[in-house]
Amino acid sequence: MILRLIDKALAGTLIMAMVSILLTVIWQVFSRYVLKDPASVTEELSRFILIWIGILGAAYAYRQHAHLGFNLIVERQSRNTKRVLLTCVEIIVIVFCVLVMLYGGSELVLLTLELEQISAALGIKMGVIYSVLPLSGALIIAYAFANIISLWQHNNKESV
Image 1 (cartoon, rainbow, N blue to C red):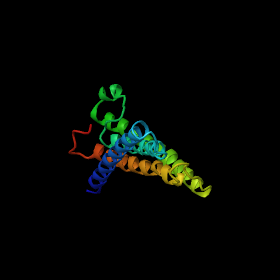
Image 2: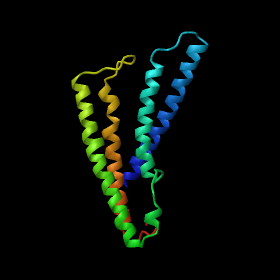
Image 3: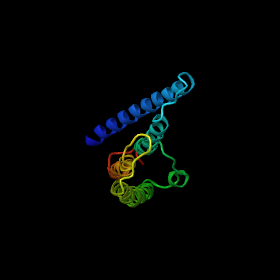
Image 4: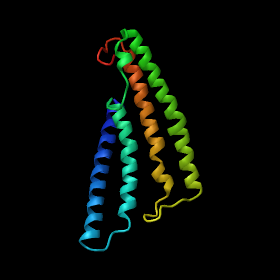
């Protein structure tokens, strides 16, 4: 299934980002305290990597059902009511992601690319940094649709 491939790519990307931020911060500390000449790009690079880890990590957590959820009311309902409630939650997530992450994120990316905003130390276009918003939004939307399909499959008893 294509979602499994996306899951593996996302997990691999997050692992690489975690290793990258670790190495970046180690180099920053080493260059600052041992070499007495702090690297100018490491602070900005680590900040941008952290942004990507946080936002892509949210999509990964959503896929793994490791996100925060208030299930007290849902758990006390019948199987069919649970399905309806959980489907409504998934639809709310989809609407939020479409409006805020896809539309709003894309507008932010286009605006910063149009204004040619460049990061100070790295010289990267800020639109590239902000592109994680629509990317993560698209992932969460795909995962939400997969969750809805999973909820309504007749032989799937684990998801409800």
